[in-house]
Length: 381
Image (tube, rainbow, N blue to C red; front, side, top):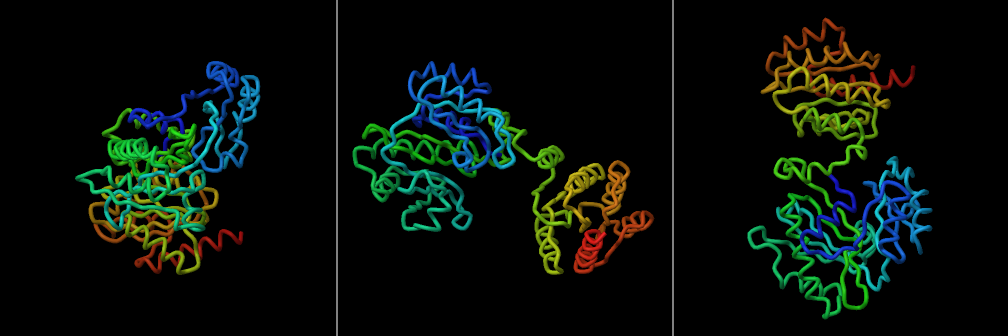
């Protein structure tokens, strides 16, 4: 789950990280009022869960409230990478002297958190890594000890931060890690962390990504989810307790188990096809869950065939088959479907599908090949 900039920064502020004292607005008149209260130049920033807001015209400097209202009018309703702007953040404008990148994320290889910093703030860290990797500093954090002060001072030194700012930087770095840890986040990021007035650090922009599996521990954070920013299919998948990721291919895949799902996607590529999604229905899926999964797959107009690859351990193949037929009773489609059911009650499952004249297969290779052929036949019609 991703948080908006304003949500991330307000969360940072709870940990003592200095942020601009701005407010959000959903109308141009509200933006005007906020700018009046700030009484000085402001920045009007689109609040959408997408990068490149500035390049898209979603970040504008306003010298007075009237100009803030004008910019808010233009930005609200703007389409940025398929997302409609419904809220803007009005922040006081500041004179930036230096920009720094500071973030915490997971290093899965090291199996611990890593703090990443760079003197090239204000630029996507991926660009910095590709173009000037020497500017990136990484410090792994012991989960038992947390971020130690000397580690934060080493980072400050490595990125060339003036010594008079080290004390502030240590406090901010420690607070950012604490926020990361307390929130069960997978990423917390300040970009840029800026130097103003020669002696002050300020978190000008912020991002947070939270672990969905830990949200039950954070009901207040869970309420911040903006479902308007999600694809409808992803919202439905979450509500149905399905693991779903939309891709750009033409073969819809429904599988039980993440590893089996990856193997299924690889096999479709091997035979010249391309998966339209990653969808793991998990173990023990009942017919209603299978039906929800199929509705999600068929809602994608790019899907030309559907491949079911079910290994019936905990999941019963006859339950999956009934779920498929239940969904087809609700969502009428001419998209061809290929099913491979192996394991618990697989014979019963195959018999149920055979009665519905569905294409069946006994091996994954056979199923993948048939689904690719079916997709090509659909495309040629």
